[in-house]
Image (cartoon, rainbow, N blue to C red; front, side):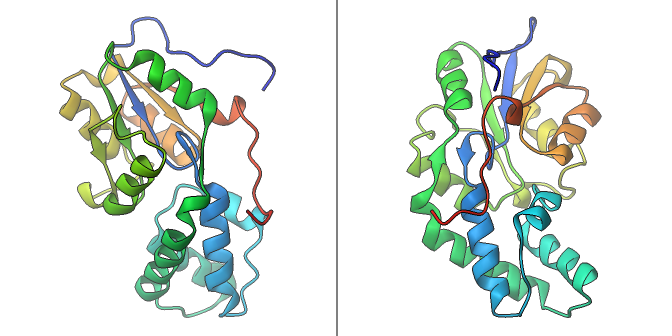
Length: 204
């Protein structure tokens, strides 16, 4: 945010992008979806609470909510309700301009893929809404791995699908779990939140 230029490290042979909060500014939309759904259960879902849960799939997020609040929500049911609510609000999302600009810069020059903790169908819908699907056709979602971030499996699968060694991949992420996953995979990584302003909590 101080006029730094977002770019790849020298020697990078492939690029992996996280999706939510990295290519797509979906975090305000996810926040509102959680807030709307959890309001029915008398849980005040704040921006501060959301920040501690960024990058965690919906069902696991509800499990953590249960731990924090001593509630007994059915994680699968509420998690899927949240995803349904999110889908209704998806049209409100915007691209993360500095990262999308980087993606377009290297389109056709380096292999690129998306590694997300989100659901496959909704991730592709995000790509289509923002017209990112014409630049990237490799996507690894939470349903494609047995161990989500911070485990490196998501990014290692991306590297495998691109046919590039992990150490030659550069990951762009907005979450600490994703940065840990990239490190565990032996990849270079950049935290994109240093390059744009995150605003959570306002009505869209």
